Image (cartoon, rainbow, N blue to C red; front, side, top):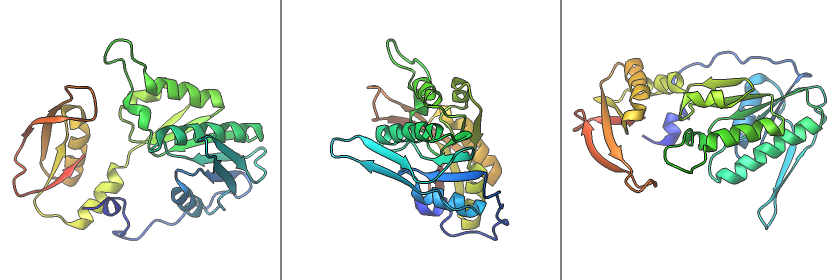
Length: 240
């Protein structure tokens, strides 16, 4: 199963009628991390995508500019924090700052993937709580609201002092997975920590689940799978 399949490139059924937003009050701006998603959101809302410019220089810094008047408007800036994580995050901060300095009434950061959400606690001495630092930076830049999806830990919403809309993609994904009609499907969590999320997928799909038992001896990206609890032999496995 490819990533494009899970994202719904082939649609399983009719789509709901698009919501028509008031054109004068709402603006959607897409950073360089998510141009296609920004276009899709604007199209669904029935508003034009706001013109903007993001230019990366040879030394690595980024210049951003909003190319239309946003004074008094409710602006949604779509910018994921995925690879290259630091570039995308700094660009997000600059978009927020630029919009507030342009007198936007409210700026909502739409962050479909928030990489630093994995750094949600001090799991060993003398380390940073990276998700909290990022939350503070987003607020300091002037953001009024955050809209994000499937945080590594839902408790990260509490790191912010501004409203956070935390959305879940499992219902949309499960609708498409059911449409694929995969035989002998089983949902598998890679570790104990994601067992609750895997159980939600399994319940929605009406299929069994398995759980992996893994460890990271060196505290890096090299995980060691010790065992898989559950029978996955000759089955289609949905890894959550």
